[in-house]
Image 1 (cartoon, rainbow, N blue to C red):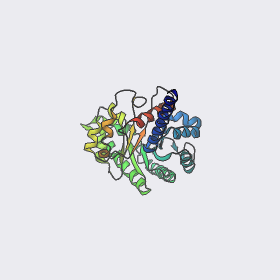
Image 2 (image 1 turned 90 degrees about the horizontal axis):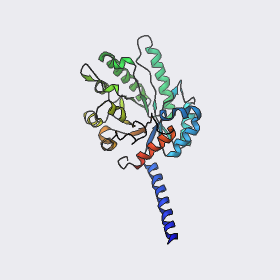
Image 3 (image 1 turned 90 degrees about the vertical axis):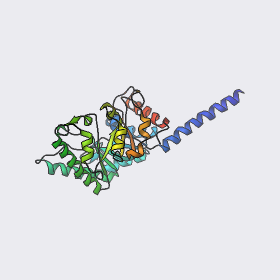
Image 4 (image 1 turned 180 degrees about the vertical axis):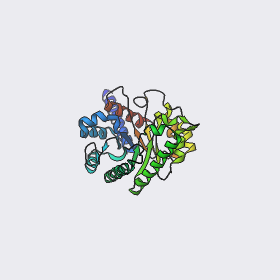
Length: 282
């Protein structure tokens, strides 16, 4: 009897491991490397290996500078990722709104940036910020929209999708208009997609489902985030959001952790486990 119990226990354990591994293969979940930025600075290869071993499928970089990613040439960084079972799918980078004096310089920067990302096989470039002009007048916000449309056109020419990532200030009003709505209405869907940060829209006191209904198919990337590790705060109800993924146009989900109860690497692993266990995440 004891032997039978032991065998059943071993079978259950092995079955659980196989199920977790199957989930890791089936669920295409990415990680925003800003979540482990200090680890990337200390030892990028070891950090990438750890993320691949956890079961992440792809990365969204946050370390582009002067043609390189984390001080590596595009193909070298891509190889590091691929050698550890990861794809290089997306990247955060960008420049603030140019003025007439530096417009040529900024556009040349974008040309180099887009070429480097194309060489690395990146599918999405996402700008995650605006300067004070973006949060000022509607005229300046319109200039930002025109700027993003132009960058998106450049990206399209190299087979890359361009997008914008929100924080909470985009959900404030100016002249009775919510900034985020204005951006959605004044950017071309073929040139600019939006990476919706599910945590920051909650902080901004707006409803993701309403945006999916009003602006269908515009939210190709999601940042899946909580105050700390996913599921930690009890404030985020992810299930109804994920059930409307098709309406939103969601193609990829990216975990981001910015505050931690544990070390950053432990936190992103716990966040991945939360999504692997969630039946509504396909």
